[in-house]
Image (cartoon, rainbow, N blue to C red):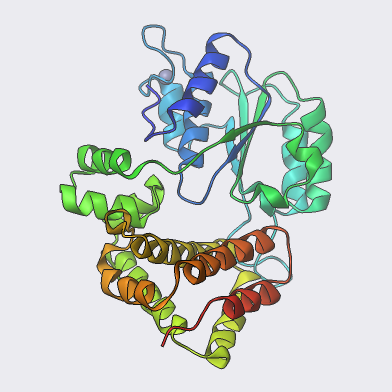
Length: 338
Ligand SMILES: [Zn+2]
């Protein structure tokens, strides 16, 4: 049982490859934060090492499946940018090159106890160019018993040479009703709460589950939306101060800034929808009044232009354009609503 929320297509691809013994040695799982890349990678790690004879792998019950689930399997390793500070006293922004070299070296060894060694790169964007080049040779001629699973939220930042050596699998946001019913079934949420979280999370199970468990996150979200509403009514000075703060944050927390822009995107999308009389599709139900007031004050073209400006900023950040420039540009392109 893969037992993954949504992503049937991705699961079907991996299941088929597993059944036919035609697994790729490098997968690139692409999708936004909280969409479910890591759960899928771990299920794959279970499936290839599962020893159950009676049940379809991953059975979830054998010793192999169990140790993967508990993070104790010696052949399944997660590689990511370390938390905390490096030897130079600065916070890590990339995976240390020694760690990448270690992976390359160890990948030539036989698995300790499973059938495959699995290296999951949680945020392959966090591997430096030097690291990527170190990895490249192994991706070109991978050892037989190794599978690399690279997780990426921003594939635009990856070297084309890395991209071309991986089988790419896209994970897309789940339709709200699908996610909502899963939240009801698996997490015991009532229908109203499940629908709200499915919408607010943008169809991302990881975000929805996190918010269900930590109500303070929902509160923080409400405050961020209020900030957006305030800035929509604010002048250039206030907007640039915000852009500057966000640009500063970007150097140490790219995902956080992307999440914030995702909120801007969802908010303006709501304005566009309400402007067209489609109030039922609104994501941020709790902010309906402010959204409706903005929709009334703007022409449909103005609202669409604001939404396009947020999309452009996200794209610029993906392409390593100066964060400050990208965000200031967005702030200038969004109409002021008094
Ligand atoms: Zn198993």
